[in-house]
Image (tube, rainbow over all chains, first blue to last red; front, top):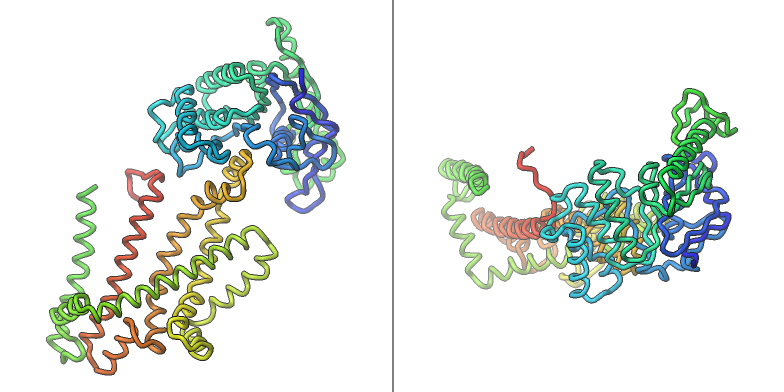
Length: 281
Length: 256
């Protein structure tokens, strides 16, 4: 299988917003994702999943290490990835001034596709996602689930090789999220895409992924499991192990810097556990 | 919906009718050179509108306002986008614009008369200099209010600079641009009259100066009304464009 995404010792350090030193979001992260895989990245809020996601999508540059996507540097070879990566974000991020149809067409317009063809493609994707008849509706007139469907259609419409999803169903009710998850997996399989699915829900990760990677903070792989053809028993064991790994993280890791109290800040810098303090990751 | 619109129109008309009635009463008390009767003002207003040579003065003023606003809008738009993308640019330009904002319109008139010979260029210069800071800051505000989420989403498609401008930046700043035009229109109408009053040989300001010299209040009112009518027509046009351009916005059935 050919490697589509590879991280070698990738570290990302941000300057703290309060100007007091740095904050490591990703630390020596290494992994490979292969063509046709759906990889679920699991971790608690603030553990650097989204930073990893932004590095893959080329929106931010690693501080050190090497990130390659389809053999290219996603940050420096920005234009190479035109039409090759589709992203579904946590919130729908629809342009309020565009109808559902025009929101789906956005990527195709940016790629300078033929207007007639792009309209047909957008209509077809809206139909596939059960939004026929809503083409001319503006986002404010659509429900949360419908808007997220539009954003999925927008990501698929450009026919990308890689799909990146950042907790796309976390703001939806469970019934809608379950339907959309099933639809998403079906579309990825049917269209032979490679997908990275970031989530903080164990069930969602296990339902969607061929492989699950559990992140500790700063983002590094704490546990990894291939779920492919596992039976229910084996899956249960994996789920228990994931819960154990996340519980260990909860007990040991300091809270994210934005949750640290003035008084406990020095302790947190020394990586001590904070008893009784709410931890984010 | 139609009912409430009719009620609003009636309320607006009532206010104007009351004002006209008060004026008419005053015209009965005071001599006509101070308060000419309302019918005379109306007939003089219509006379300006239907007399080609007089209407030309109105159109000349309208053209000056439009050219001044357009110049300030283009320059302000370029400056706002440049400032929006560069902190250094902001450090250089923003204090200068703030300084310009503090200079009274009349000072710009004096500067223009001293510096330039051509009347049209003088007026254009005055119009641009008095409305440029407001245009720049208003467009800059609109640019800065651009959603970071939408920016990242658009960038994920790897747009060219032109695509980013066309598909994200322009729609984002359109509401700010329309507001800037509405705000600056009234300002420009006041400034253009001052500019024409002291340095022009045609236009509404020039005609107002003539009416003052002739002590003709009805004429002064008629020419003032030309300008008011012009501003109202353009404001309504901008509102119509705004309603069309921002038709995507959700409207609550319950008014605030």
